[in-house]
Amino acid sequence: MTTKEIEKKLEAYTGAEFITPNKLAGFMGQKNVSRVKKKFLANLPAIGGTNSYFIPDVAKNISQAATWED
Image 1 (spheres, rainbow, N blue to C red):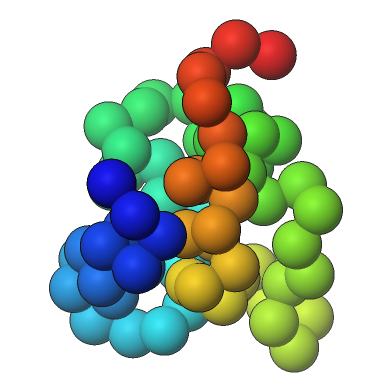
Image 2: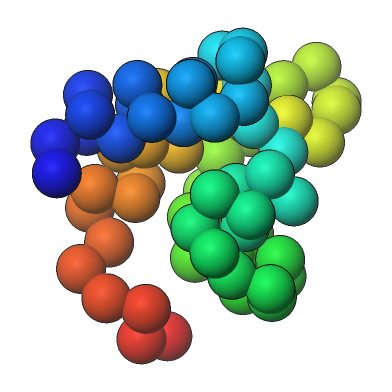
């Protein structure tokens, strides 16, 4: 799956251009929000001091992650 495809699916899932760690975990079918945050959001800035992240940045991180191994 390409970064653009992931981005479109995330935007369709959220209905916005931003996503929270809880929504990202739900999208990925993961119960452990901390693990999702560590794996995909750790190096990204939260938007405006909120708990939301810009979907294109998140999609890029997801496409670059090869496995769930830590």
